[in-house]
Amino acid sequence: MKTVIFSFLTVLLLTSSALQAQDDKFRFSVLGGLNLQNINGKDFDGDKLENKLLPGFHAGVNALVNIAPDFYFQPGLIFSTKGAKDDESDTRIKVSYVELPLNLLYRADLGEGKVLLGFGPYAAFGIGGKLKDEDGTSYDIEFKNKITGTNGQSFYLKRLDMGGNIFFGYEMASGLFATLNAQLGMLNIYPEYEAFEDSEISMKNTGFGLSLGYRF
Image 1 (cartoon, one colour):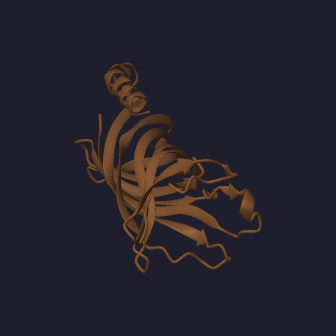
Image 2 (cartoon, helix red, strand yellow):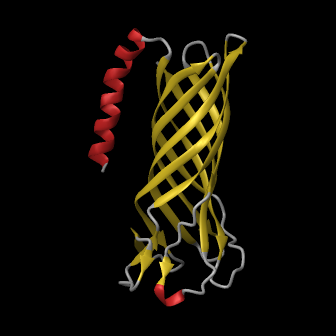
């Protein structure tokens, strides 16, 4: 998976200059930054989860395609770490995702640069992760939609996550930009357990982020 991601980024980087030369309505960006993520939902008894924000990071690329004056379609490919922590039990969940945001961006002149305001859906695919419990024991995260049995050495989540993004920021004339974003997961990423069909457990990714990037 890492090889595929690296190859994809390399192809985008090598082709972006050529595409820009042919059509100035296409732009290419690299970006990275800080995540503050949480997992909201309900526990086995239906009580609200009391998790706290977990720091993480993201890095990737996006493209900018002009579709109307000051409006752009902005697809991307992002590697992002998400999760949550429970300070009372000292439990930590950290999950790595490859994320595909499909945003609509309003990008208009403001001063010597441009104001940025965007929103749109995302799809994310889990590629790995770990849960560390209060005893310091680590469990690998495995991705399954339905569990009929466990091996006692893994923590299970669904691989697919989907939700929405909203962000705003500013882009300088040099191409440097910064954005603040919020993200709300819509899918329950906790798998179905055959032995606990009446369980009310639900887990949804939510969070905030700060991105710094450069637009070519």
